[in-house]
Length: 496
Ligand code: NAP
Image (cartoon, rainbow, N blue to C red; front, side, top):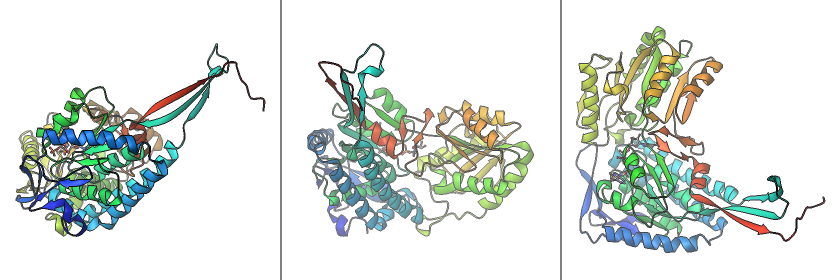
């Protein structure tokens, strides 16, 4: 159970502690932040509201710890990460329990998130050993005008202190996708978990603590992003920010100093359906892509752009599948569970009302109870409706009927987002041409958008992000190239 057994140190009274200098601590603020269970809408957990002085101390320790960590052999760093991964997987049940209570993730998906996270940590350790274990050797005479008098050795060196800020929807997985590459590359890491999801993240951090990482190398400070966020992201001790979330990331990128940024932000992933598509496959993918975790995924299908000639048939097929989705508590493993907060549910309702006023066809009756919103397919959505462009982050999916593939591509590219998209057709040539024309970081052909497998490159264009994720790209992003040039007194050529 959460906060008991091996996790007992994390909890004192009814408030979870923060993690600094290898210890679980109470904040001197004497204040806590409540985490509301989306299902019951009552306080489920409380975490420390850390102070700016505590952030300063964490940054100092992170800087000191990083210097000796960078001197720790690569194989040893990998060994510790493998250990943390095993501990994380061993304790999947209590961590999944927190995910269920804090963010209403269906029970089975919650377990999957923890297991996937353990796998991600292990994979990163292996990949790090491979790619950080080699550099480049260049000779000067390949550039015009030079003799072979210079040998250049390049290697990848750590950046220093990495600040990691994940979002509520994958508080464990999107935290380890930053922690593991940072650590294998010789950096230290400061985590600021999302408030909804903080207790799951604290339990995950405890698994790293149990694995025996040096003091100060990993820290976890809790508190509301709106209160300590700016102090963290503008802190002079931070050498790199890896952030996943919504528009907050755009504001952070404007405020951050001259440091590398990895930003994975929102999306409005379009699903373009051509006339020759396998409509059963499309319907299954729209359900999985649009409604899993109640649509609260960055890569959820967020708008369907279907050719008019097959639209009636597709809508009927999707409608039939929507009717089978179970709605209710995450503990019961329902397909549709409450969205994360009341403000989120209100925002979604605003989009639904706007679509109603402007004449969208409701395939189901709109129904809401607290934060629970029943799955809703909106047909005949037009570009003047907000739902055509905005990210609901809930179980509401708009369908726009199109008369050509170009119309679909145009809608996709007119969005300020450019995360992923997908196209359904049996014609591979058309699929490639459409994929090339879509201004998104990834296009899936004949499947719904997805972030995984976690070693695939993952990136957003436009307001969807800066840089690229995926195990290899994240390791590279959290390093810098260092070169050492050996200058010879005379040209030297090997004879062979
Ligand atoms: P969010 O509101 O932007 O919050 C993300 C994180 O930022 C949370 O940890 C939040 O902490 C923190 N934060 C808030 N204000 C801050 C500030 N001023 N400075 C620094 N940090 C601050 O996003 P969310 O609601 O958690 O997640 C949903 C969004 O994430 C969606 O837009 C979704 O598309 C996007 N997302 C993108 C990806 C991707 O890889 N592209 C993946 C998943 C989700 P608090 O919780 O304490 O406010």
